[in-house]
Figure: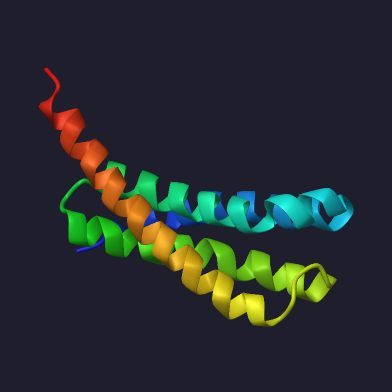
Length: 121
């Protein structure tokens, strides 16, 4: 049902970028103030998109894999931000839920890209 190596790969890459965003937000307050939420959502959506595009076996499975990748790549990074004092603790749950949702949307759009890629000659 899932491509576990692919899911692991996009989650690790998404986690690395999320951790870089957390560290940048800790050292540069402007990043924390202006880019944390939008950046986290876009990174999770991109992880979901790449999973759905590479997997390409259906919208539901692509969205589910994208939701898993989007949520898993965020949790350690936002926990780091909470431990560093850059993010409030309730944002752990709110941010994780939002990133699961954007990961699922990214996975569905990734499946659409996989479908379009198959149509091209």
